[in-house]
Length: 124
Length: 393
Image (cartoon, rainbow over the protein chains, first blue to last red):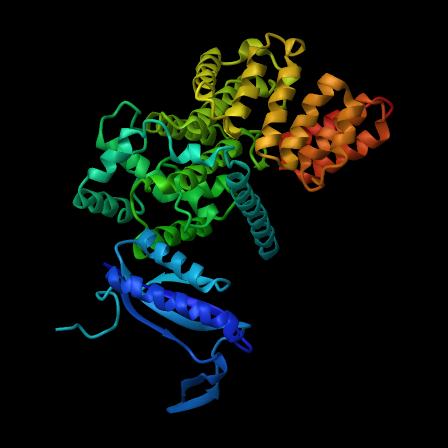
């Protein structure tokens, strides 16, 4: 199985009111349940706004701290789900469900590098 | 040098944009009148069921072969359509893998040519006016995405087939069109690309004999290709359909194309490719240009405009209307079209204005057309037409 990161991008600014947000959160909870039941769900989280981010950089032996986020832009990562799926078509199927559950926001689907290719220490 | 490269890059972008636009537009314009008909295709061909039953192991093996030999010749180049069994299925899978919607449209065309057409990276780069390293990088990226994102190497599930098949047909059509009239260069056509598109079209038709649009596209390509011997004169100059020596048309291709048109239209699910094939079949029926059944062609364009409306279809329909109702009626329609960036639009206007005796306006339109094409043979034809206008030097 291949793992995929499903990223949710959202515009900066005030989040929408509960009349919009509540049904979305319900949809998301239902989708997470569906993913778990199908054995596809690995991990999911929402993020605080990009303005809460802090960026660290190594420079001349010191670590510099600056107010984030790292990228300039009007849209930032708002949350993500990691799933496992046999191939891209299956991952896109889940990505499509996520896009439908959330409504207006785009979802980026990106494969996680295989363990052999990643720099993680080998697991026992 | 930098300036020259800049120009090449600009040319590349323009060509890629054109292809990307066409590929976006075709799937939309090509939506058949009854989408359900696509899904519930009669007698779903056996190839797909066979593919589904095949083991994962064979699948992976073939996938590995596909992806880990980037610089070897295409796996199936040159093998004929008579080969048996699994090889044919693998080719079909390869076509659908190359045309996966998650790949950029430009990459789909390039990958199809590379892996199925057996064209070298240099040839593809040349065909698309892209520096070879750029094309090599584009191919490597696409192959890397297929491998890393695990784009499946299979014919998609039945429910996905209508969309995916549309992309495959659009790619073959674009490859053929570039072969028929090159978007730039000093030759009118690129026969290698046209021949390759037809070869792939035959393969698809053999593997999916129940899809009428597949047969329609193949018929369209064969009928257009049949005229290649007479499309250019001894000096390499462009010869228009009306002036072509019809005895030099390839009768074998005409007969094959017409038989295919009859076969697919019998299914009574006409789509854009089938109608365009039927229009070309009517041209092929006429022993001389004067005997062309323009009324029937106009009817077919009416039908095409109804199921796949676009300004380009409207422009082509106006050309047929000029033959039925005269140039004035056609010009009134053409002038309403928003196609100012398309050289054929100006060429059609020029011809209609010439026939109406509006010489000065015709000259301007020929100039506009010549300025918008980068194909030297087309430019030459348009400039000759302008010089032939009465009363202009």
